[in-house]
Image (cartoon, rainbow, N blue to C red; front, side, top):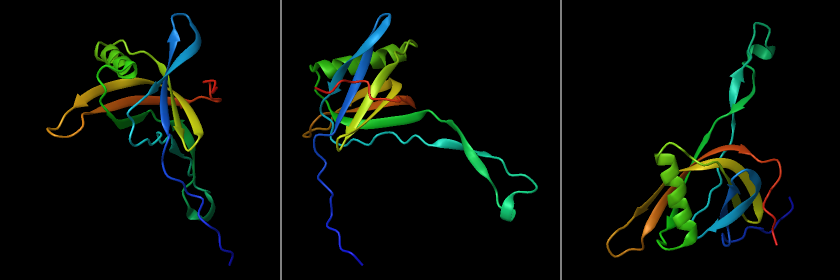
Length: 154
């Protein structure tokens, strides 16, 4: 049996970006969200549609992939109250609270692998514990994955 050395690396420099469109569309402007400690991209798995019939092989149920569900994504950030990226998150969450959410592009970069989705900010909530760093919870609704990564990497 061959031996293979691990190719695992530490989690560092993972990133999340929010892309906003100007009025009328066009190319989105991406803003990096800072203060991220743990970054897990959303799990987008299609629903199973049961297509079992009386002649299904081997007396087994059969399924086919159905529609993708909306993913609820959430993460914890360090709270940086005056930072432009967190002011933007609060603005987007406020729009959602008032019933006029803004669709954005959400790009997750983990280990250099980029995945971009359409979604919106559902909530941005700062928290605080005496004697500890201030944190904020960010939650988003994530829709379809974009076929190509839109953000141009310099």
